[in-house]
Amino acid sequence: MSLKKSINLKKLPSHIAVIMDGNGRWALKQGHDRVFGHHKGVDAVREIAEAAAELGVKYLTLYTFSTENWNRPKFEVDALMSLFVDTIEKEIPTLNKNNIRLNAIGDVESLPEENRKRLKETMRKTKQNDRMVLTLALSYSARWEILEAVKSIIREEGSLDAKDVHLTEELFASHLNTSDMPDPELVIRTSGEMRISNFLLWQIAYAELYFTPKLWPEFGKQDLYEAIVDYQNRERRFGLTSEQIKS
Image 1: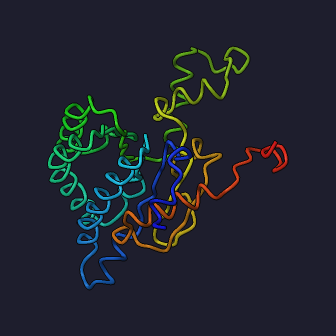
Image 2: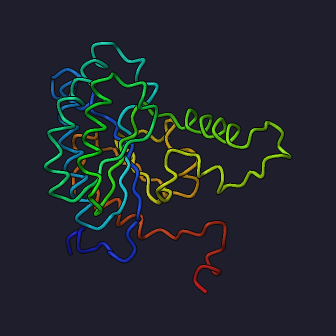
C-alpha cells in the first residue's frame, strides 16, 4: 500500500507547521552557493502546499524568515528578499488554481516596502480561496509575538495591575498572530536539527513533533505523507492516561 493510501483522511491534522531548514546546506552539497538552495526551496514549498491541500489539510504554516535571519550575511538576506519579490506574485495563479489563500504572520512591517506591497497584493488576490490557508511566518519570532500580545492586552485593558486584568489562555491566544486559526497539531522540521528555533512557542504546546534528516529542497510529497502517517500512529493523550483515552 502506498503511503498516501495509508493516510486516514478522517484523522488528518487540521494544521501542520513546518520549520523549513537546510536550503543552504543542500546547495553547498551540490557545489553551489547558499542562495541557489533558497531557489530550490521554493519548489519544495509549492509541492508541499499542493500536496497538503489535496489531502484536505486546512492550515499549513511555513517558517519562512525569522527575526534572527536578519543577522545573516547581507548578500544572503538581500538575495532572499529579492527571491521573495520575484516569487510571490508568480505564485498567484498556482494558489488560485489550488484554491489556497495566502496569509502572513510576524513583524511584516519590518520587511522592505516592495516585499510588503507584493505580499499584501497576493493576499488580496487569494482572499476568496477557502480550500487551505497557507501562512508564511515572515520576520517572525515567537518571543516577539508573545511580547506583542502582552502589549496589546495592556493597551486594551488599560492596566498593568494583574488584579484588574482577567487574563485567561483564551484572552492571551486571541492577541496572538494566529488568533484566527487552530493551534498546529503536527510540527515538521527538516535537516536533522532537533529544536524549535523560536517558532510558535505558545501554539505548539501539545503539537506532535516530527524531525527528518531530509534537507528542505529534498523534502517532497512522500516525505509529507510519511510524517502524517507517523502522526496518525501516535497516541495523543493531553495529560490523560492510555486507559482513559481508550475508554
